[in-house]
Amino acid sequence: MTRHIPLMVFLLAALPAVAFDAGKLGQGGSLPLSDLDPLISQSAPLKQEVSDALAALNKTADAVICGGNRFPGQWDHLGGLRAAPYICVFSGKWLLLDATVQVTGANGQVYDSITPDAMKNAVKVTETKPTWKWTTTDPFADSK
Image (cartoon, rainbow, N blue to C red; front, side, top):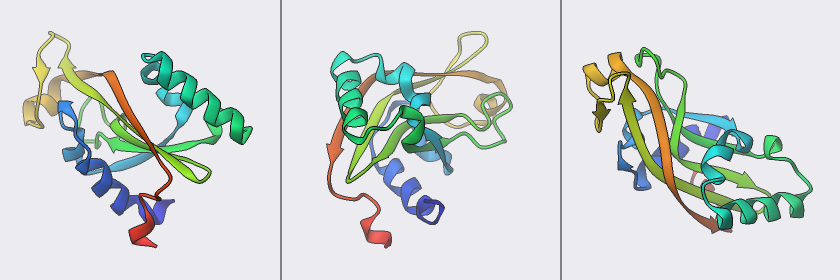
C-alpha cells in the first residue's frame, strides 16, 4: 500500500472537508478501521453497513486498513493524528468516508486553516457528521 501513498494523498485532498481542510496537510498515513469507530458510531446506518461488510469478509475492524490525512510533526500537539477524509480498503470495494473536521486549541479557539498559531496551539481534532460512499472502482487504479 505504501507505493500508493502519493495518489492516496491526492485522492483524499480531492474529497471535500468542511471547516478545517485536512486535505491541505500534505501527508497521508494509514490506520486500522477500528481507529475510526468513534466516527463510524455517530451514524447507525454507517455502523451497520461497516459491520455487514466486515462480516461478509470474516474480518475484524483491526484487519481493514484505511488511509487518512496526517498532521505532520510541526503540529506541536497533533503531530501524527489522522483526519478525514479516509479511504478504507475492503476486499473488492472501498469505503470513502468523510466528516466535518474541527481543530481547536485549549482555550476553545477554532482553527479553520493551517497557520503557525494553529500548529503551535491546536490540541484537539473533532470529527462529526460522517458522510460515506462505497465503491467497487479501485481509487488507486490509475497508479497501477
